[in-house]
Image 1 (tube, rainbow, N blue to C red):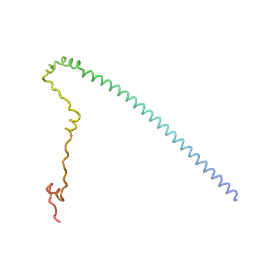
Image 2: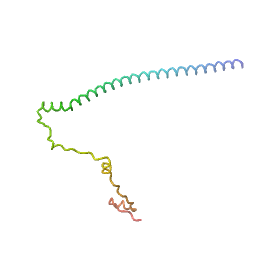
Image 3: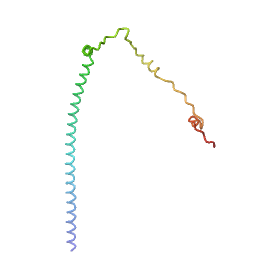
Length: 136
């Protein structure tokens, strides 16, 4: 009788261990498959975003070239004539040239002297805002 219960305990113990190993392997497999699917999904997102980035960079370069063309002197002159804007070059006396100040002068000119801050007496702040101070 002791032998049967001991053998039953050994079989039950072996069964529990086998079940735990199977659960571990099964859950590990599910985790691995989930991780692989996430990697695949993220790879597709990266490819999609890289294609969009390439498209936007090409579009940006096209727009830069167009802007450069539109801002060129020859294009501006052509459009002035095309739209009959009656614009002309300014006379030399109409041109005002501004010289940059040397670095030291700019630094000194921008620096403002600090105002001296004096500590207030107790209750002085309340008077500034029209409030009466309570007497002790």
